Structures are given as C-alpha cells and as structure tokens.
Image (cartoon, rainbow, N blue to C red; front, side, top):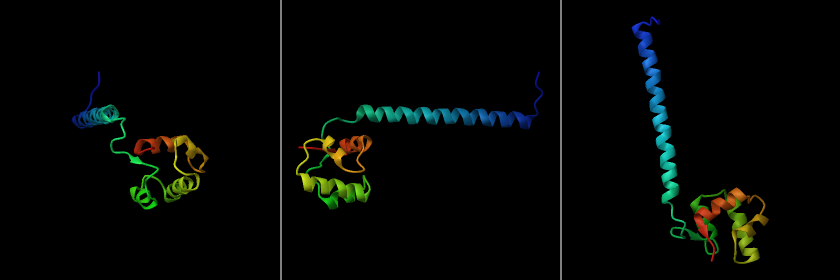
Length: 109
C-alpha cells in the first residue's frame, strides 16, 4: 500500500508524537484554568477596599495603567466614597471589562 522509507516513518512518528504532546499541554492548560475558577473564593478575602487605597498603593500594584489609576483616584476624590463599581462608568477609559477587572481585586464598603 504505502512504501515509506525508514526516515519517512521517523518523520511521521515525530509529527504524531508532537501533535499528541501539544494536545496534552492544551488539555492540561484548560483544565488548570477551570480549576482556578472553581477554587477562587468569591469572598472579599485578599481584596482591597477601593475607597481606602492610596494613589501610591494603586500605582504600586500595577494592575492598571498610570492614567487609569490616577483617573480612578481623582474621581473618588472629587465625588466622595464609591458605593458601587458602576459609578466608575462616568470615568473616561473605564469600560465594563475594566469594571470586571476592578471587581476581581477590589471591594467597596
């Protein structure tokens, strides 16, 4: 049927092995990502109060760009304590995605 040389068989075997290794790595990476989501607590443990964090501390965390961090602090200083993350939608550059990121690391009291 097929008459392959020994070198051709080695090449085919190499590609098949590489494909299986890649599938294994992909499966493991997806599995670990799902486990991380399951094991992550929804409590405020490890989160920081966005109403109390200082400008310097927010910049030191490097979670967001300097401009966004400064806009958040300026908005809070101007409007007073935040009662919900939705209030930050009034800040230029704060999108729904950015609010989701904020909710991962901060809480409001």
